[in-house]
Structures are given as C-alpha cells and as structure tokens.
Length: 220
Image 1 (cartoon, rainbow, N blue to C red):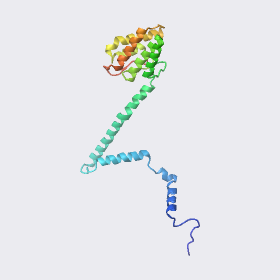
Image 2: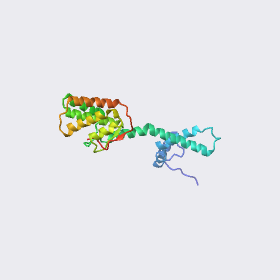
Image 3: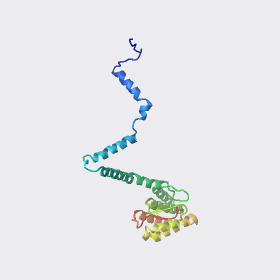
Image 4: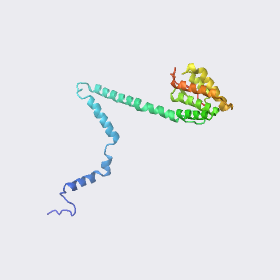
C-alpha cells in the first residue's frame, strides 16, 4: 500500500527551512535550561587553565597532581581575597559605622569644610566641634582607633594617645576644648581652633606607633 505524504509538511526541506526548524527546536525551554551559565563557563575556563599547567607532567603520581591543583586554587582564592575582598570590607566598615551619638556619618573632607566654614564666620564653638570631629574621623578612617556609641571626647583622646604618644597633651587639651564648647556653652576662641587645626593636620601625616586601639564607643 502506497504511503500518502502529509499535506503542508515538506519531507525534504531546503536549507533555510531546515535552519528555521533547528532554531525553533533549540529555542524550547528544555534546551535553554541546559545551556551553561556564566559561572559554569568561568569554572570551565579555570579548570582548563589549571589542566594546562600540568600538561607534560604525566610522570607525577595522581595524588601529587591533585595536591598541586588544590594548592593552585587556594592560591588564587587568597590572591582574590587580598585584591578584592579586604579593601571592600574596610570601605564598607568605614562607610556604614556611625562615629557619634548623633549618627554623624560625614566623611573627613566634609567635616574639614564644615570646620573651615564655621571659622570663616567666627563661629568658634561650632568650628572647634567640627574640627575635633574631623580629627576623630581621620583617626578612625586610618583604622588607628575604634569608637562605639557612648565614647566621650576624653575617651577618644586617651585611645589616640596610644598610637600618637607624643601628642598626648595636645589630644587631651583638644578634648577639653570640645567638651567646653559642646556641653558647657563656652564661647571658644580663634586660638583654640587654630591649635586644634594644627593638631588635626599633624596627626593626619604622623606615623602611628601602635596597632588600632578601641576607644570604647563613638565620640559624642
């Protein structure tokens, strides 16, 4: 009995029709899901690179080759962490940690500009307060001291005196000036502001003598 071909279905498609059939078939979800992801391709590239390192090393025992491969991967992970991981962690910690009880998150440059603007207006209490905040922010950003909510200005001075022992007297004097204008309503003076500005500038370029010190809280 003769077979009757189905109408409208070419049994011998030309090249364009065959290509369209193939594209339609490969566009189905089951084929898309089976495609390798970017992570898969990256891992394959790393694996191929590691394998290329050991080409010609067929004389080595299998366990030795496996150990060398593990060491290479571990070295890559360590390098990646040092290059990309740690700086990001440090930046995140500096950017998100509030330094003061009033949740002041301004950076060092902003605090310096605020101090200079207050000084230009002869607002010495505000100028002294902003300059002392800049001093604290600079020490924290350099990871020389660590502060937490509740730390007083004198606590910061005590902590900063450990990496900067030669500035101990100036630090305690600056903390006293800060407390005087912020909590006691003292008017402050141009001389006090100039001394604090000189101290903040000197600490910004001084080499610390010790590891980071906890001040017990964020400066008020």
